Every structure is written in C-alpha cells, then in structure tokens.
Length: 295
Image (tube, rainbow, N blue to C red; front, side, top):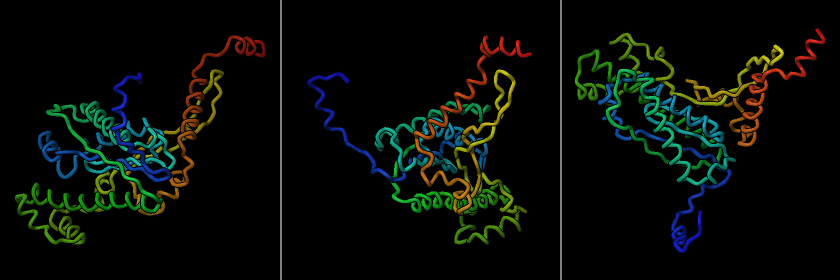
C-alpha cells in the first residue's frame, strides 16, 4: 500500500485477531430462508436438492482453505472448523468470517442451476456469519454435538408437522397445536401409527446432517512406462454419520491431534499433484531409446 498523508486512517481499524491455540468455528446461517424456500418451492419437510446444494457450496469452501479440518451442515446452516494452529489471515475474525460467507454464498448461486434446473433463482439468497473460539477439544466437540442434536430434534418435529399438514389434512396451526408438549416417543408413535412412517428409516442426511472431511483414498497411478502403483490421494468427502459418539473421532485422530497442519496438508497436496503430473508426463526420449535397446 502506497504511503501518503492519509494513511493515518488505518489506525482506526479494529485489530480483531483471535486467540492462538484455540479452535475457530465459522458458522454461516441463511437469512430470510423461510421466504426464500417458499418462493422457490422447496419440498417439505426436506428438499434433497437444497441440502445437496448446501453441501456442494460447503465442499468448495473446504477445498479452498486447507486449514479447515471439518465442516458440519444441516438445514440452512454450516459450521467450518479451523485447526487450533490455523494461521490463515493472521486469525483475523473479520477476514475469516467475511471470506467464508462470501465464498459460500457465491458458490450457492453459481451451482444453483445444477440442483434446481427447472427453478429460476428469483432473488439472491443471503447468509450471515460469525466466528467463535473454543479453547478445548471437548468444548469444540460439544459445539458440534449441539448442532447435530439440533438437527435431529428439528427434523423429527418437521417430519411430524408436515405429515400432519400434507397427509393428515390439518392446517399449520392445528398441526402445531397437536405437537405441542409431545416427546420424541410420542412423535415416533404418531408417525408410525397414523402415517406408517418409521422414523429410523428416514435418510441419514435428514436425521444427522452432513459432515465434510478430508479422507485419504487409495488410487492407482500408471506412469509413462505403463507401470501401475498405489498412492494415497486426499479427497474432500461428504458423510452423513454420527459425530457425537467417539467412533467418528477415533477413526480420524488427525483432526484432534493436530497432525493435519497447514504445512503438512500443503505438502501432501503438493506430493499428490507431483505424482499425478509425473504419471501424465510423456516418456523422455532417452528413456524411450533405452527401453527399445533393452527390448
């Protein structure tokens, strides 16, 4: 930035660096989505197109920032977890929050037609965002537990509510009154006895939400000589699983142990790309001549 007599105005900028060695979670949330979903004819209680679009946008965000170790989404919200050692944008809250929400929103609009091919986007969607620090592994996990429990509670209620409205012929006010004060067992019984719906058989994406992680998958690479070899390739995967119990975390210890540092992930991506380029490269003339002589 060029120096001038006006540069003093930078002193008014808020220094909003977040505390070091803490988990950073950026949560984005749809604004005015009740109106947005109604205007665009979203299916109730769940529109698989909308959920897949949210997941597509989230995947773009995770792929673009190597220090995001995990993301969790449900309904019209997504939480992105940065590693405790993250250094992106000097851990400035405003930078992280605005960058993620703008990238997510632009991806949501960009890929809209891929999931809603027959539905014109009538007006731009909007998302807000916030960034929160969590000082320990346990508290960060409890945050994610909170969001997944919220997903289950809301989905069970909405499944009952819209069954009463769409299949039971009730008005929305009547359905709301019918469900007032009911517990989970009551809702399960209502769904099964009145509509033949076994809630346990509902799709996991509806009940558990979506988890975005980086997984290493074995791939076969064939070099210029036609020799095949197995390598590990890092891919961003979308799961619909339980993140409350320990099993998920035991299968992916690198998330909490901090092995997936930014430098480490960058190095892994670089090695992966170098291997792919090497396999695609044409055989050198000297190597080709040598191979012919040997044959």
